[in-house]
Amino acid sequence: MPSRGRWNVKNCSLPPDWPPASIAGMKRSREHASALTGAGLKGLLGGLIDAARRDVSRLAIRESVATHQLRVRMKKILALLRLSQDALSGQTFEAMRMHLRAVKNACAGQRERVVRDKLVARLANRFQISLPRPSNKAVRAAEPPSSSYLSHQLCALEQLLDTSRIEALTPEQIVAAHAITYRKGRRMMKQAFEGADEVVLHRWRHRVKELHYQTLALDNVPGSARRVRRARKLGRILGRERDLAQLSHDPLCTAARSPWSHVIKDCRSDLRDRILVLGHKLYDPAAGRFEDKVKRGSLAKAA
Image: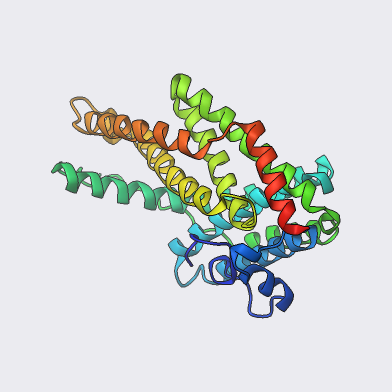
């Protein structure tokens, strides 16, 4: 399922029996979009959990696609839970994060291997580098995630969601939490500009993705269409930088006189130039002005 574009029924892969009122709300044009309420936010979270269950059921058919979609949905859920923190105790939020992390980690081995192999093949073709000879040593394939384990984690997550009071959140609280996400991402951008350390870039990438997913849900916020495009593009480039950073530690690149280390270094340098330009575009204006703007614009539409 595609994950780009507005957070609507098609892109969010909501179940066909989703409440009609919620569908109508998400299908409204941007000119008539209403502020996201606590009930609407809780509904989106429930829909993502239902979609994740369908991903689990597809593991036996298309494992690589299903595991990727599961990881993306867990990131979307976490992004929306950050909008809900005023309605969640610290203990409940951490418990929900634990279940999300368990699902992501269970799918990580398969996903990382697929990404690594695709990246190596793409770079080899682009720079005309010979692919390494297969090792004689048997490489143990990553174990596929257990469907029963994943289902258990999703069930526990849903129970925590059902007993929460997210529906009591006001649009003002949700928009204020969104502004905090923007502020944190802008702060991480400044840290990345100062040193461009791969750990900082990786942490910043998480903040960029959270801003992206939150903005998809908050399509009444002024400038949301432009912000979604920029956040999606920046998130993809930061993702490529992360893949290259991980590949740079691979035995393929650390071997003596390996041409791969030079190729990866040049590619990362080019990406970082683009990252800095896109970062400035995404995180303009300053955090204080952004918060004032989104509060005035989005809540005026709701009035």
